[in-house]
Length: 252
Image (tube, rainbow, N blue to C red):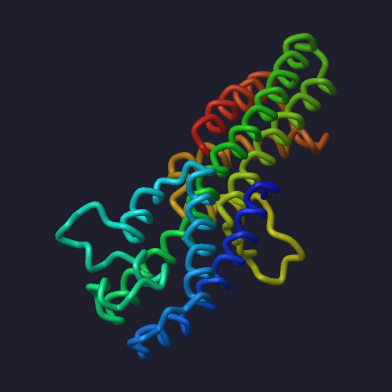
């Protein structure tokens, strides 16, 4: 998780604290017809301007909708404006009930809280793209090693192992960035393995059953490369690198 997202999360928590502090002030405002509450005005502006700047600075899609909650441009919906209450204006200029204010306030708060998910969703493609870039480099290394050592079994095996590392690491990164829980099968295993990973990716519709079959076939080749007692062919390792690269490029 990037430091930017962590900072946004912390700021949202602060703004939610401000919002919680506004609730009793608004209740007092509606109960007292003569109320002119300086605390409400100060905290109301502190909350609104803090939220608006957070949404604007991060280019979030909810900015316009949030501003409509605060000060609607549609005359028909002016009684939903939060601004008169949060500015502690005279009751004579307020056209909405306490219940209507709460409805608009809940929506505005929800828009701010949802900004965390929007930013997280933006980051996922960036992380997986970086992972793909690393995998591409490793596939290139494996391919060059294979081409330069067509008759050397040890180097052929080494290129297959590099290809496996590139593919497996990318798949684990995709699972991690999607916050997927990879279940062990059986549960008594010490750690989850590639088979568990593939089952999870299929279950979460990240990969198809056809892609899973392809991946299992490629990992079988890679496993043979890592065990000298098993035979390995140049053509199989070549397929591992070629198809592994292609699959990694579409599994994000």
